Figure 1 (cartoon, rainbow, N blue to C red):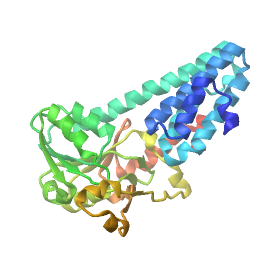
Figure 2: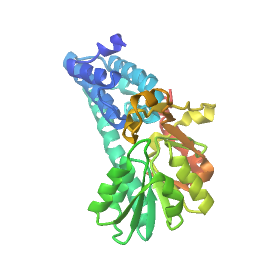
Figure 3: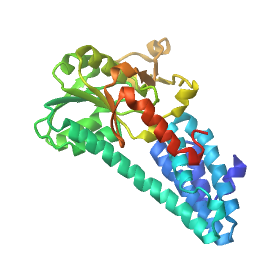
Length: 325
């Protein structure tokens, strides 16, 4: 690790440390910081008149380190890094100045594309829901929040279940109130009662797999199960960068648990009583493909049964970045 860290400038090393020590959290922020490290190495190459072959070797070392570490927890990091590497293909064959420019173009092109992808996801979702009278949104997702901001439907009523496992509903409620929507802020235990009157439910995804399974915050699978039972469409809003292609090679994601003891302190139990209670709960759980109507992505609204083909197409585009390795 230290050998890779030493490739970077002082500022680059700070960003490296911020990710490794978890002083900065969130896949999107980490992706941006890794891109900054690539730019840092390009600047060093320009200053030192470095050979293009050496430049791409150092970029690859940094890329491989973060794919191996941070990418294990979030496939979005691996996919984003590979998308940037695709833009640097054959860099070793270029002149020094051209190689440096290629790195910069690859990083900024990825950032522009990522912003564009989110806009398309949000626009597709807003178009789908523009005539709906009642919808439910679950969990907290910046993409779903942007969808609510974009939704131009003053008549819509939004049902927002508050999940105690994440306390994410309040942000949705703020957005919907500011948009002038009629908001129902409900406990998640009441979801089935209120979903009966909804035309669709929406949530984000932490990860999606080619077989149509999505992983998201605990409770999302309950929304899906209820929607299936009540025959209500259930949509996942997510860019394809969250695709974990390893599923086609037999990979199975392990369950991660959180200790919710601090969150339950407000219920009135004594310290002595709390010592005898197990507060552990899964952080993320799979949403079965049979519960999901479709994935709203930058490639359009993909029915669950069609995701596999679209996943392979997306994966092939990353082969210049050596796929998911």
